[in-house]
Length: 616
Image (cartoon, rainbow, N blue to C red; front, side, top):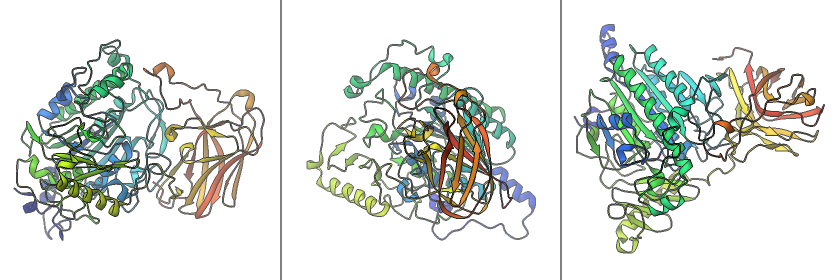
């Protein structure tokens, strides 16, 4: 059956209404026939980090089996870095459209008027959950619980400082994890599936590995310790490879594989495999120079190796096993494809950049639709062009060529390593690809990566019980500073002067009373400093009267030195209650009296709404 014939995303069609007088049993049967969906997203795993793709250095039998029992999207493309890919998956739209222009300090947030894939499935009666690295906004209404997910467990930043029983959050509240983080996240996904095995469910499992810090349990690293690494065919990769980093990354990938195996066995044991769509992909190219099928580029690059990702889709009830789709596709295609496969009728409120590839997955070779930046999403034409960008670099890809913003064109069929510029011999292709990039610029207005984000951080949204205000999102005045230039999982330190201030640009969404908690560390000799929290005209005075002399940790678990900062075992201290008025304000924290050498190291503030407007 063709995609257009199904009417799933045809213009002018809304969600189908239940006919009057329909028996409840009919509705129940329809619900039971709807497939479940599990989407697994790896973090910094390259196309070459699976044994199926010829990497001789590791074994990923569960991922290989998933690919062979379903369909491989063999030319599947994502963004060069994390948050943009996640936004494109969640919305089906190029990431600048949704406001995502960076990976930290607010630039990773999706605009609140975007519809997410979780919104769609939740509106259609699915139980929805996300477990892992969110990376598309921390405070409500950017928080995953505000974007269609009933349950969230994990972290909202771009990276995390510790993978063994770390500080995390569960639906906004601070909790502590259990064991190695990818195992813990998979456990939560498995538990959710078991709890909802009789209902349709949508589970998003964005794992945090093999993103650095390079931490992995001994049972997985033992195989790779001292292992001789066979080099990538790309000589640049081979020359620049750091074997010790590769060993850790491959061990982390084998741990991912084990967790995928556990999840798939759960579906088998619950007799849910036939009716469950399982999707696996990664968010960008590999986070180091290592085996990547000879392709040029790694994470952060717009060359093929920086944006090509493994992608496997299995749905035994509807998709024959052992297929490979060679037409180009990307993260923007997953939303319309999953909506299509699930049989949901939905009209996009905004133009999508993605297309449903459900027909290709089912073996329907008829391709419809227009190129990217189109309003018809019923299929993919052979001349489709995908555009990607990061940090001022843009490239465009069709089924044969990749064109870069500097005017160079590479024939990927003949030159997969992108070594020979063939722009001069293909002026028509260059014209078409350059036009696609120009349309992308005109329609999405991409900003410089990680440029200052003008949007304030939302504080005290009426639908949120908890609002987390981390050091990552703040600035300092005076000598206080963030402990590492990679801001995502940092804390403020060197807070030693009455002139030092910790500052946040906030917008109080709704007036109310809040209890404020500070997560901090302080040496016993420094206990007793008095601090003042101010937001607009409201102030709160407190005394840091409890020691938390905790050292930096994580070094013992790192397999290779990290570039990110280390963390501490943070302690929470109630600062008291404060009444906040609605509107934009500067939130500040400063000392009014210093008892020792340093006021404290400050990880985050947590605001708990006390008045029950609609707090969840």
